[in-house]
Structure formats: structure tokens, C-alpha cells
Length: 204
Image (cartoon, rainbow, N blue to C red; front, side, top):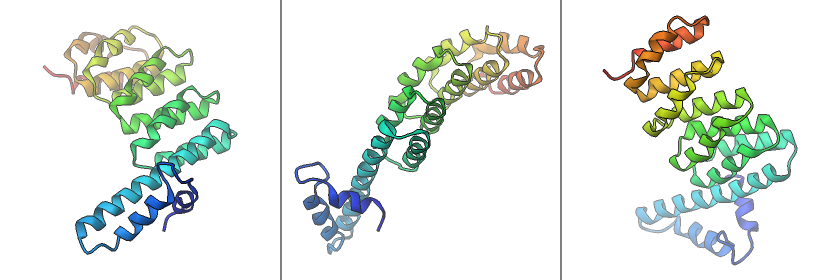
């Protein structure tokens, strides 16, 4: 029995996660029909995820740096859409480490609904944030991002360039070819390497 059961039992009557619902579903785990047992188990798992997500969301709102990071990593282990809202909320946290962790986690999930809030961070004044956002957006494989990525190839920050190049390689957009060919002569070896790799992925 997972740690979320205590949270579920403590939920107020009338809440979406009320105790009556939990007890009924637990009884359904012993139903004669295997399909009913399976459905009940899935429902309980979903409700436990919701309860855990809410608990960790509260930690994100009021905890210190260590508590917020613990909450984020715990949310990252929950495979449920309920965690998306607190993860997106963490993108605007005042603590940079929290923001960075949220960007990485949203990039790993690449859930289409979170693309827009990540995209807004492309204008963040912090280059380390922009670099993480570019890498995260590249995981979405969304061709609508191609124009924005292409416009970033005119910059002069090597780490930004490297991440943009890698993202364009995932999109396989042939419009990047001319710029990537020029970047094979870039002063930074990691930019040249990224350009060479991306050229191998572009559509012809």
C-alpha cells in the first residue's frame, strides 16, 4: 500500500477524493470480474496520483529551496497529467534551480499542452534558462517551432547555438541547411560538431 493512501483517507467528504469513493473502489478490487478489478485498481492509482500531486503542489507554493526541489522530483515520478499544472507553475518560481528542474521535466514529458508556457521562456534574460528551454522544446518535435529556432541561429552564444542546432536536427527542417553549413566553420568545436550531426538528419 503506497504512501498516498493516508492522504486519500484524510480527504474531506464531498471532495473529489472523498473516503467513500476510495472505500468503494477498494471493495471493487475483490470483484468477481477481472475487468472490474483492473478498472478499480487504475482508478485508485489515478486518485492517489491526484492526492500526491496536490500535496507536492502545496510544497512548491510555500516550501524553501530544498522542499521545492524535493516536491518537483517527486512530481516527476508521477505518471499522470495532474502534475502538469504544478510543473508549469514552477516555471515562474523565484528560485532558478526550481525553474531549471521544471523546464527539464516538462521537456522530458513533451506534453503538447505545456509547449506554450515553455515557448514564452525563449525571451528569458538568463541564457542558461534559454538554453534549457530550447533543449526542452526540441523534444516536442513540433514543426511550428522551426521559424523560431531558425531565427536563433543568428546569435553568437555558443551554448545557445549548440542547443538550437540540435533542436533543428530533430525537426529535420531543410531550411536550416545553409546556416548549418556556415556553422561548420564556427570557432567553437561543439558548435561545429552539432552542425555536422544536424546536417545528417535534415530532409533532402
